[in-house]
Length: 216
Image (cartoon, rainbow, N blue to C red):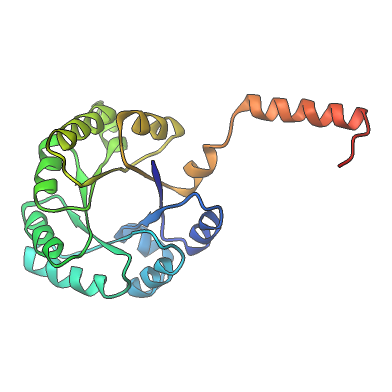
């Protein structure tokens, strides 16, 4: 499974990229706004911190505007993936940009039928929002599994990018359900290493080493 970090904080991205565990970055207008810097400047800097895809989202809502903005974003760096909403206009823009060779991440997916349409429109990534489904008492993991089966049935190349991940359990369940990618905040990525038994075991080992005066 690939790991993308969901942030526009370049310090966090640089720190995580240095571990070699990060395969890409996802952003959205809300995350960019927090950076307090020009949009294109932030995206360009992020693209220089990773060789993987960097999702940059359009703000237009009509197909013509999305295509225009998407082309502009794609010129920022070779690893930009243009992020489009899963609307009818978004799908039309996806087909145009995909046919031009631009990677497209279709976002705000909440149903398997939407994911099927995105794949047929040529999306490189589909982003089902599992956390938001959980918020309304629907099973986000069931959606991941349904999309996986449909894509496998028809050999679609579109990668399933599990989004709106909020907990380490979301990461595990997404991997079990067959998601190709999980995108998550830096705090969730860092929390994946934590386990109380690991801490307890390390504490015991260090105590024994101290008693035995072991030095390396």
